[in-house]
Length: 600
Image (cartoon, rainbow, N blue to C red):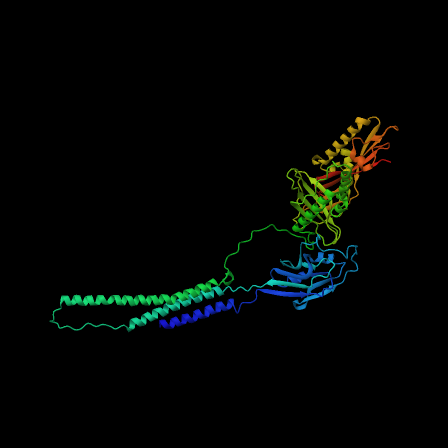
């Protein structure tokens, strides 16, 4: 019976081990699914839709092969289509029955045509979430959602690479191969044990049985013979022990190959050949963020915003070092550009004139992008200076006018260490841009600059005095100190023969306002401060002996009609919503010399 069970164990072992090995070999499926895309190479751009990339689950391994430069970027599908609106491109989409289709999309007749359309390069656009560039071929792994697409190009002029391959990993793990092989090995060992026990049983059953000889009842038993018989029995026992040792040796020799086979099979089983029973960690609860239904996505992501700020800082730093206003204009606009243009003019004429504070590149502390699907689009950032000797915190408003433009900083100011910003939405939620004439704030954004200028001009007599938090305003005292210093300076040399007057007005730049979580808004405005020094005596003149900056800007050193000097203030306010008891609060500012001219 032991042999029968041994055979059964051998059969079970063979079946289990064979099934386990088959799962890892002949029955194991492919590990990768591949889709090859070939285009006709007639357009400079190819857009692979997110539906194609997400047609199978898992990360997407993208390989693009071309003859020269290979450029790949990815971003929101809507942004990429807007960027490609003015040029023809090849669209790779998912058709019926998940079949990949290619078609040429002509340039839109409504898209504006620019002088740089034909020679536009895709590299470095602020729309891309990331980009890659290589010569000959490019391979990268992505994991993009359905609302993102991949742009493939060469240099923007030559045809885009026509060989594109997308691969997805396939789960071909065999979690029961390991248990089958392990169970088969156990059955094999059990069969070997049963087989050895069966042989041992047969050998014992075939051993001769010894019976004692009958002795006469009256025949005495010799003690010596008994001793000899006992010795004879004892002398035969070593032979039996020797045969037993040989049997055990043979059984050991039989068991060794079985153990070796089992160990070899186990060694060939990787982690995916076993069931994964490890319990996953319970996710920790996170704050719930409710995004209004139908709200557009934020204009940029955090990484995208950080990269844009870094590019702006690099470009402006290069422009500052070379006094190149044209280069600065590629990344600055409005009041932020105007103050630097003046600074470059002064530094070219006055070598000891200090440069304006650099645009800090990192670390970016706060990112508040506008939620929009159109242009222009705005992003507010708060960036700390990396200079430990002169640490500053800058607040900036940067705007992208259209899909083909880069983000440019239009407002920049310094935040005081004691400044408390209102509660803002998370970067992945974004904020709506408040219209300039919004009536939902205690003061519309397009009236803030004029109201603050009136505050500068009239102080407590201003009609806007009660609307602003003047107790914590640091700019108003600085303006008053500057007025006193300019007046004292003029009186030292021209008292009785000259006078100086001051005025403030709203600057020409449009305000920018982004909503806060309490339905208020952060509003950036531009205010001009002007002072006019003129003689009160017909024989007197205003000299610029102690004012080389005005002299450099006007090109003269004295005037009988006087001089008008204008400063530009870039000011950031928190404007509360209607019904709030809070006042308009100053957050940050920057004041710079803008222009000087001879009075008419």
